[in-house]
Length: 353
Image: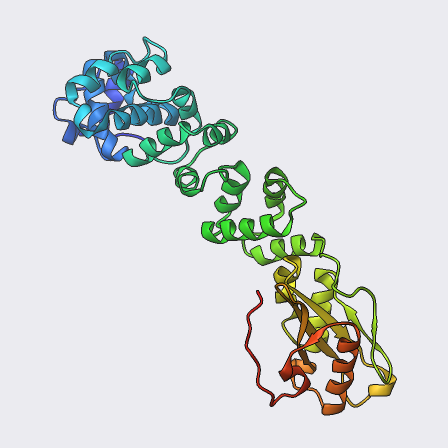
């Protein structure tokens, strides 16, 4: 970042001589390299000869500190006289004292934090948003642990709900992840992995691929402990074979792939104890049908109800196959929904979820 003088010679001569450049007409003396901050720098340079001598080579950290100070003064408070007054103290007093005088309500630690700001000068609203974040203990702790802070980071942290302000989320979003998608994924995992603390879940975000958030969710589903099935073990089916409960997410995925259905989407109802899937594998006595899957749901106060039994690609089963599964499910103690026994029978359409 640099300024432009009315001619290159003007700037070079000023630096060689050590004299303060003439900032009488700031609109011409300074270009727009520092955007909205440019006229304020001109005001400070006019009031502080030492600053004026190095105004062409001030580092990014100092520019951000000045921008922070002016932004926290507010548009009405950042008058030329006030900016000049604080500008005269640059290099003469610690920055935290200067900032405290310019913005008495500013949280402590902001001045030191400005050394880590990156990128071009931010908008005034971003600096004020950062100051608000420093008023929240968790957000302040996160900011203090960040080696570099960008305008995008501040925007991300300001959108995070209470309890979510963590470096891990900022790092994932910085890799171009969609913030609402990441928050949604965290909400799902918090419900699925009741065995993990928030710290554990946030730590695992480091392994998230922003381009495949679903894979991160799946890994947690795979590790989640499903509740015990309503009927454990195999349920014998007349003619051979048995219905076996799907007790892990991986088993659901594999069954869904084998039968070309959406078994994997039943993980959440299963984890909540509201639904369970049983898979029938092909048996030599039932060569005429390629396997099946049955769903049972919990009816509050009534027990478990077998609500469906379908074959490959959710196709209806042949009558003999359906009769065999209904008999097995009834024998295991499940209530049988009318439509499961007879596709044409009336059904209450009860939603037990």
